[in-house]
Amino acid sequence: MTDTVYKNARIVLADEIISGCVAVTDGTITSVDSGTTAVPGAEDFEADYLIPGLIELHTDHLESHFRPRPGVTWNPIAAVQSHDMQVAGSGITTVLDALRAGTDADARALAEQMRTLADAIQDAGRNGRLRADHYVHLRCEIASPDVIAEAEAMLHHPILKLISVMDHTPGQRQFVSLDKFREYYLGKSLMTPDELEVYIAERHALHLEHAVPNRSALFELCRNAQIVMASHDDATEEHVAEAAEAGVMLSEFPTTLEAARAAKDADMAVLMGAPNVVRGGSHSGNVSATDLAAAGLLDVLSSDYVPFSLLHAVFLLPERIDAISLPDSVRMVTANPARAVGFDDRGAIDPGLRADLVRVHFSDGVPVARGVWREGKRVA
Image (cartoon, rainbow, N blue to C red; front, side, top):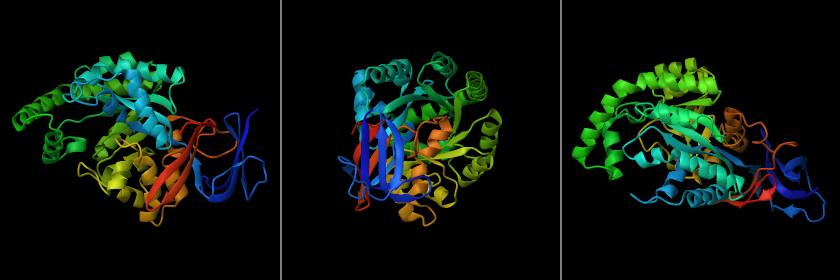
């Protein structure tokens, strides 16, 4: 039996913050007590916060490590390890790494090497190379002709935890505004203006041919395999109704207030990007995550493309919205995402749960993770 005690901590529980100590035995939380403790050797947190390890449901950050430059492909195990170091250092102890299914112009090679990355994530975790607990979130582009075949190939992968159904066709969902779409793609320098117009026309044609049948087929695959489903970039009440009818339980990045409200009314959890909170708005010109939080329509935060933004947003929301407490915002990155994908052994500081913990010091508007533990083992 290995006993560890953390004392003099501001412990963020589900609905309150207490000053006290937490005891851990063999990777499991055994007690949570208010007040001081005289246990010899207890680690003094010096009034820093103690929160549950963060749970990340949607990050494509791994892509930037696997393809760090155009035409450059990194060793997949090394890429996963590099990504993992930044994730764990940001206080994330459970992460669903987003991999693409369905050919896209800006990530064709990534789609083709999806299985390679999934296997690398599994192998690295199995061999003790990773600090965080990694799973796969499969992002399925329904306008792509090969998305069903690629999804089927991944459907029974041991670490697949979530499938999202998305449509990035110009003029649809995330990029309802074609001007915003052009600004985004030209800003990434992926194409010339003339090439982009050709691409837009091609994507519209693919959408007309494939989107509707592929959406139905993917929903059917997920239901049969009992995989948790998410919709992506819902923009209208009709989008939400379509997803709810299919059994979707998670609405990722709704682009309008109306869509977010419809998702809540349909008992779907609403997920938004932490970078949206940190920046104060959407880079695509869509609804602000902070506005959704103020309206009581935000359940889950995701770091999306900046791992540290998850912890940062947790401490910014209570400063910006009087009705949101720190326990409220912490639930958005711990208990709520855990519930959304079926983790029942983590997501809170309660006896019997995994000792996935983060020591946080907060000053000058930016938090710092002073210590990160996964199942009681120090990982960052």
